[in-house]
Length: 146
Image (tube, rainbow, N blue to C red; front, side):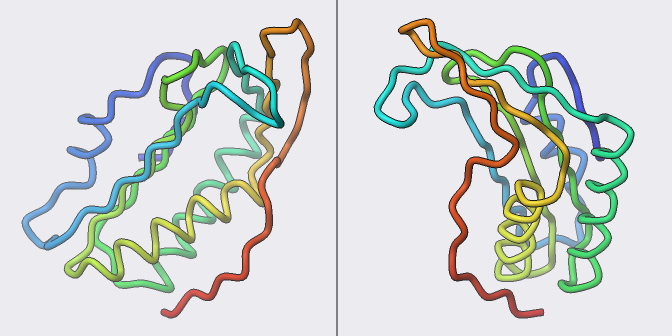
């Protein structure tokens, strides 16, 4: 399941989409809208994407994760449009026979999604200011082992 959507993400649906008797582990990442950024109070986020390209890149990331780790199923769902504080912006689920593969693949997917997928975020602050960003995420020293 690779999807961009304007409606809230059904986490149970995402979880069910990767569930299989072959999996001994399912790792789920849920990215939510927090109420603060850069010392300001966040009112809401708005996401926009170059949808065709975003979906294509999400499919590439799914394939890369599947090639690097022994996983059974992967789901990547990202919201577009307005996302209120506390609501899910992105949900990633990875099913694998063993937990380490599920953890590693899930971490790789969210980090790579933020780096490569053309999704832009507009932060609306309670003071009325607005800030757009493509990727507002710090690079980390990370190492992935296949």
